Length: 372
Image (tube, rainbow, N blue to C red):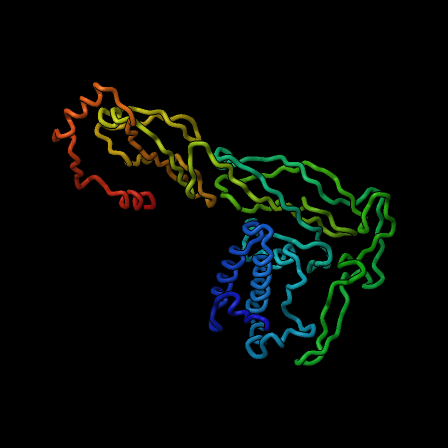
């Protein structure tokens, strides 16, 4: 038995359009193929969520579903049915949910037919590795991609099956009566054109594989897993179709010393017992070069120094995060005889007895401060 669309998205029948959209986006992100590579169950859940949203986000279809259930869309009735769609088709249909160029702008392969009657070439998906210094300022990357392009000398003729429309009409009987729907032309796969002359080496659509260098402008502040779109640089479509896009998935390379948390960076600095007692100054690495910091006398292990503005920028351009330097006092594991004697002589001295003051924050207070 087919699962209820409301149950798939985890919303009630009284959910608002905004709640339905939010629930779908959450499900889509959870089961996104980039987060679940090779996971067929996640892919199926992703398709189910897309199908549910396609119905529940449309006021007319939602009303019919509320009245007749899944029966309203059986036997060819206009509605959902993503079982035969691939991921790119779903991405293309619901690019608005992911918004802008992050995760959206996906397009299907041939046969998707745009509203203007022009098919769009399939998209290419690539991963680009970025170091933190690239994320700090943004970067222009040049990558080589292999894409489908029209073969030199290929010609196309108008498809006789659909007269160049890219779609054919189909009449089906449903519980609501006879319904007429437009479906993709099976002959030209929505292109409206068929290959008239195919050069040697070209595929059935008159396309060949060509390697090209593509420039990608990556803005500052991107995060691991963010998806960018380079319009028109994907595979070309046959006939007068429009090229697909390149979908760029950002893969962040872990820094040797700095750890990222949103726009903030964390740095672990180990100091000696003597440096903690007497005070010192240390030089540390930042993304913009080395910076010298001052360590006060009597510094306690766990103290956090905040270097404001030394973190990463926000993708929304709301300023830079901070660099949080965590001071860790290193306790020596081996001592000389004289060193042991010194500590034996002072271990009971009042200066060496722990006396945390009110100003000394607990571990949990420090964690709280980090997120404030």
